[in-house]
Image (tube, rainbow, N blue to C red):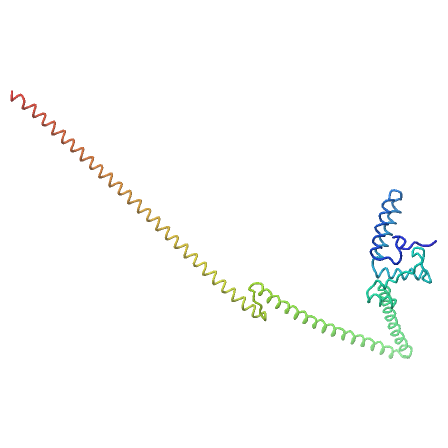
Length: 303
């Protein structure tokens, strides 16, 4: 039984472009969703997963190249199948940039080359360990006395100790150099940040961070002096306003007292006038009564 290819899953030829693959994916997904009610859930999920896998594999140039290589290797001579309609598959390298074509020409896909590299490293490590064991075995086999065996062990320990010490010294030097570079980079970044911050604040670009700090301190001092002067001026204005308000209240009180005194004086004058008029009336009435009394007294004598 011939296995269905990913091209056949999407219903596209092997030379299909990315847009055609996407269109085939949408078409296959629509057909699957239309027949969902006629399929059991397990078959539907499997088919949907297969369609998604076909779209993801064929849309990525690197994974598609690896899939085409496997497909051609499986078919032996690389002849076209029924889904390719008698045409040879278009090499994926024709649709890839130059670095990917070089990778394909070397026949080392990324995953395969990475695995081969790990395998080579493992073989090298295994070979080194084997050679070390062989040399140790040769040394021990040629050592006929326990003293030579002990000497060989001591030499091995000394060599390992020297190697460990050299590694520690090298590691400390590397770490110190890294810390120094990191400190220098941090200081440089801080200096640039200070200069940039000064430029954003005052619109003036300076050459060094020290000058920016000095200028910024001068600006801060002038701003503090201006703020203090503004506070003094505001305090003087408040004191002047308070004095003016006190003077106005005093003037109002004096004016009120004067008005009250004038009104009291006018009332007193009016009362005195009224008292004088009353006395005049009383004196006039008393004089009139005395005149009437004397007239009454004098009239009988005249008769």
